[in-house]
Image (cartoon, rainbow over all chains, first blue to last red; front, side, top):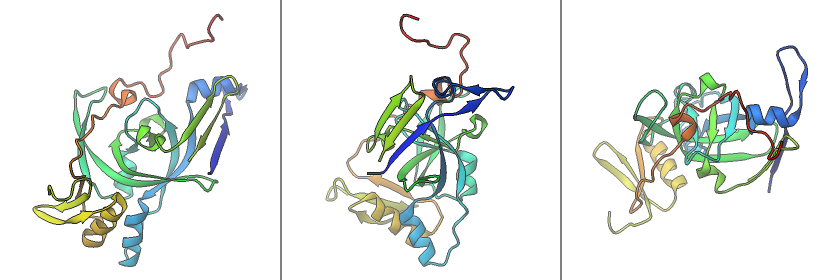
Amino acid sequence: MPILNIQLAAQDPSGNQIPPLVALQQRGPVVQVSVSVEQNIAQQLLAQGVPLPAPARGFALIDTGATSTCIDEAAAARLDLPAIDVVTIASASHASTQQSVHPIQIEVVGLPITISAPRAIAAPLAAQGLVVLIGRDVLQHCTLFYNGPAGSFSLSV
Amino acid sequence: MTAHPGRFVVVKGERLLGAFDSMGEALAAGAAAFGLQSFLVRRLGEKQGAVNIPALTLGLLRADPQHPAGRSGS
């Protein structure tokens, strides 16, 4: 079972090191990821000789408050991801909007951890510096340990 | 449809591609037939669950409270 262990490190605008517990409180449990088209789809496309778009790289925030995983809508468009459903979600600026659902694969950069999220909802995440929000549909297959005092977290998949 | 509860169906327009045992099989079949075009995948008999993403709904992503939570008793 692959285990991801991260202790956050950050600097303030003056370049001073921020203690890990403050960094984790400010940034949340984030991890660098590479997002691509879901593997079953990728295999079919490769078999047809269809070139796959380059993966989208960025930060994923682990969000235990979210029922569903989300992908940044601009990244989803760049990856040319097929939509496999539509759901209605509320946002801060609109009472409710129809958002497309995409099958994606999330790889943790630098580690042999691959997470399948077959129903990731497109949402405007880029403005927050995120490419993915990892929700409870993925976390239901994981063990998450959040160590606030140490400014670290562990995720096993 | 009622003969396949729990299976995953792939639909494009008015065309039913088929019913499959897993999401992965459904996605593979959909991609084989339609490439990167959009197609619908639904699990038969499963009610669509409510989507609740407070970080988006409330605009809480990267919230920067003036009074961040501290330790209990501090």
